Length: 293
Image (cartoon, helix red, strand yellow):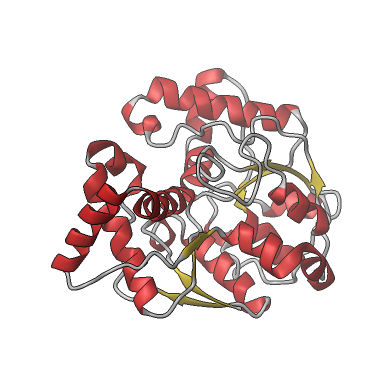
């Protein structure tokens, strides 16, 4: 299997552990991921709200570069980047006025985009291309008795993704199940983590973080597992502040789904970036007798 790979800004910064773990899984499963040469910002959802045409131009440039390199599918781990590139791809295909403006912007940089790419999330690739049965066969250290709350975030399935239910996604639940984890019923799995509101409207942002952490702990989860670097950052970084504000112990490890997948496949903690997490997970793993090296 061979894919073009768009990391986005987060996976080169605060989400470095996500990049380390997703690339380690790809290597283990024999997936070739070729990073797009000279990629730029995805345009981000915030930029979409300011100037949609410019945002389409930024996203379109990444698509054009990947297409020029001969790719058919581009894998995008960040939920915000996935949404931006997926939206741009669909708008360029469906709205002639968007295609015209984007083509003009790309032509100014010596590029063109023919619209041949598919935008994919690693979760989609793991479940639908590699397949759960093959992943199950590759498990070396099952996540036995580890209670996991699967958190998808609000951007991955709405409104353009087609690989899972937009209201009740279950693909990560199924993946965690074949890894041997005890998947907790987590009804808030597609609620907003507060995104960038934690910085601009802290009263709102911290309240949303509190609700998500509180519900996961109330349901007995040992860890929350997410597929988005911004969600991971929000839910992990503000735990001390939220715990003080609401006078409750809300500490709980927040891991990328690729990190727990790596543990199940027998990869080392360092290989999947677990030493980078702010809330240490090793006491929890030891308590549940989940192997890690």
